[in-house]
Image (cartoon, rainbow, N blue to C red):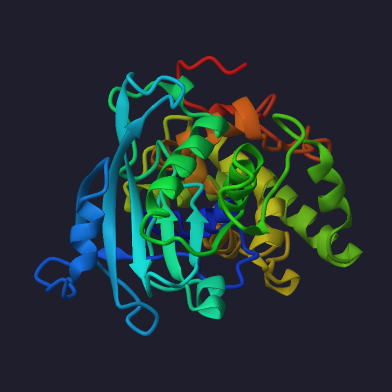
Length: 364
């Protein structure tokens, strides 16, 4: 769900992490090569002395908000019900404002990163801790067993870390997140309700099925009738003029060095179906949508700008595999109402976002 931390995924990645972002809830990145790390105090020694910490190095951070920050690797069980079983290393970022200050815990739903204090952190004058979600970024176990990726295990990861870090910060704690990170905050509060004093999800989708049909109603009612009609006509034009547009898409994919194992036409058509959802998520303007009879270059340029296509490339699918596994095993997702496109789709017969799940993994 690094806007864009993932090459070529700026628009799609923004959708996964959500657009209802009041403040950046990110933290620190390691120093750039050749850049001197921030000066270290006794905090680094205290962090390294904590049980389970295997690495702690100074990190770049918002110097207006924090005195120092660290990127930390913490080792803990893959299954907290089996503490003697296999273990993995989980990454977190800790930005220090003061031992006597509250803590804002950012429960990342994806990889962790960034360099600024979030809104809650600024309002509270707090410390900030970003915990990378298991199976993302540097927090990927070896060997990888998809059955270890569950909502409960993620909540237990957070519980173990919070209990440990409360030895440094005994004050008030607030958990927060955006989109899937907001979901993660809610799940954590559900399984460990007494760990934090408050939970503030900026957005947290609650899906009721693997492919929740409630999205259809939203797309049928969002905006005004003229905007919805313009979106639909643009999608139809992309389907009808596929032969004109596919060479442009192929050239674009080649220039970005994207591989499309799903098939170029298939990925292109999935991108068309995703367009309506992405349009409202990105806050696009109906006036910017090209007319159906616009030159092919104009149709393509708008398609490229929204960039729903990337999600269906090999690189996009690989980046979001953990999310899609979770979506189709526990937290749910959505699909598309294709009733208006049945006679227009050439490559897709029964489209489903389950094609984005890890290959060879059973999805129940």
